[in-house]
Length: 95
Image (cartoon, rainbow, N blue to C red; front, top):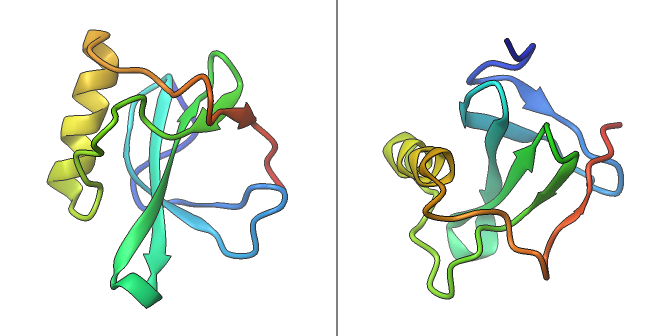
C-alpha cells in the first residue's frame, strides 16, 4: 500500500511549488498545481514502480482540472490504455 493519499502535498526537486495528489493507487499518483495565468492546472503523473514522472502519452490531453478527470486518468493508466510519455518523463526526485 502506498504511503500517499489524495490531498497530500508533494514537492519535487526543481519545482518551486508543491503539487497536490488528486488521485492515486499503490503505483500511480496523479498530481496537479494551479496555473493561474491560464486559469487551469499543471499536472504530472508519478509512477512509483518505475520511479519516473511526466505527462500522459496522449496527443490531445484529456484534462486534469477536476477530481473526476484525475480519476479517469488513473483508470486509463491502470487499464494500460495510456502510460507516462517516454519523451516527457523525468527521474522521480522528491525534495
